[in-house]
Structures are given as C-alpha cells and as structure tokens.
Figure 1 (tube, rainbow, N blue to C red):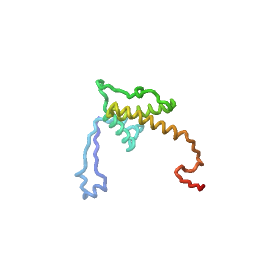
Figure 2 (cartoon, one colour; figure 1 turned 135 degrees about the horizontal axis):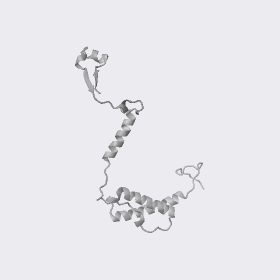
Figure 3 (tube, rainbow, N blue to C red; figure 1 turned 45 degrees about the vertical axis):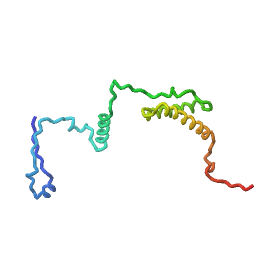
Figure 4 (cartoon, one colour; figure 1 turned 30 degrees about the vertical axis):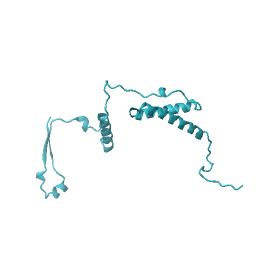
Length: 152
C-alpha cells in the first residue's frame, strides 16, 4: 500500500515569505502505516511522560554494571568491638547503624586507624545524646537559652 501526501506551509507562513509557497512544499510517499500509532487507544505523548521516559532510559544506560570480577563487599558493624557500658541495646544499634553508613559512604577512603577513631567518636556522641534525650521537655516549657538572674 502506497499513499502520497503533499504538505505545504500554513498561509501565515506563506505570506511571511512573500507568497512563495512552492519553495517549501514537499511530497512524501508513505509505504507502511503502523495502525497502533494512529489508533485512538494509543497513549498520548506529552512533555511530562516524555521527560520521565527519557530520564529513566538515560539512568538505565548510564548506571555502571559491576563486572563479575569485582567483589562487592558490604560494610558490617560486627567488627567495631563490644558494646561499651552505659549504652542500651537500642543506643548501641544506633551507633552500629551510623558506623555502617559511614563505611558505606567513606569506607574505601578510611584507614583502619580512622575507622577505630570513628567508633570512639560515635560512642562518645551517643553517650551525650543519651543524656540529652533523657531530659523531658513539654510544649509549654520556656526556652533553655534565656538567662534568669535571681537576687538573693
């Protein structure tokens, strides 16, 4: 099946070029028409759906796939030592989670000494957080940064 179509510029464009429509006319011969594309059931393509599909396709193409030769290691918090005194299980789990996250982000750049230092810093910070979290604060309590001077 072969169909011939003839296309010309709209009238306002023709007038802009001095009425010389013959310069911009074209004849196109269509040999195959995909009925699915022209059907009313096809989903219309708008800018938003096009952008989503474009970003998804680009992300899939650009994400590097690890080769089987590369060994993927997951950081573990099992090697950070025993739980220090004064921390509950929930607090120690929080220290381990923070340590695991730091290893995930910066693990390749940290030496063994820096990793040990991280454990000490995280444990010290967790001790401070426990004391701060134990202080009860209600909605009606005044700000803690006001200075109250009392005369004796």
